[in-house]
Image (tube, rainbow, N blue to C red):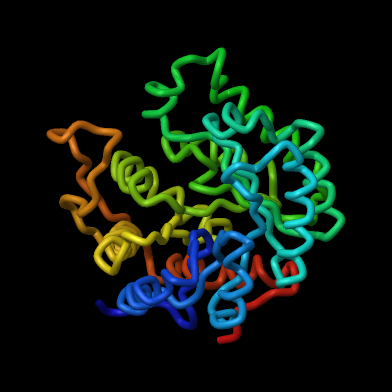
Length: 310
């Protein structure tokens, strides 16, 4: 497949390379689709080996131990923050989806999480957050609002914390701020918080919701071309070989670069089999793709002293 129409490296700013043993299929697929560098959420236990062998291709996002965090998870997360920082990580991710908040019993504005945010602020790290989830989930598995809360309350929580950090520190809202269904909300957030960026990760979600509002989304991306980062949300796995990984990279490139109208190669479990989404590509101008694929990522990384050498 031809490379994206970009001068310099194509940078995936949101992905999950979970293990060293997954790199062969990962990098083979990425090379085929012209994706050169990765800002990845990898477990600390894998990050050291990945840094040793592929550090020129990767920057790490600090994450906690999501599986079985244990009763002392705050202290463990703080230790992991320090270890990731020593590996060169300058970005920290807070996963505050409704399901996660219910399962882990944490919130972005809770005192325990604030300890970690304050440590990240002291180190001048970029903050990334997952707030919100698809409308299909709020209308389905999150219908018990006593258990999961409401979207409006989740965004009020986010804004309370976003407004409390220094104005010269950057915050990245993952998955188009967790609400691609409401581009008006996202525009309002971008207008009121100049230090906020969004990434466009999450393949099935973006395919469905961007395609559903193709013209509005294209205008949104062009208007905010200096504030959006490309991210695939690609997740590696023992059973996820070249074909699986390639389906995600293919869908993103078709969605952002072309005027493709047609089926997606990825089954969307949020919709019935007979109601699968039709992809509608945005055909973004080359100048916009240059910023989303490359320029914005290097600009954001430079604020914390990082770069991918060209």
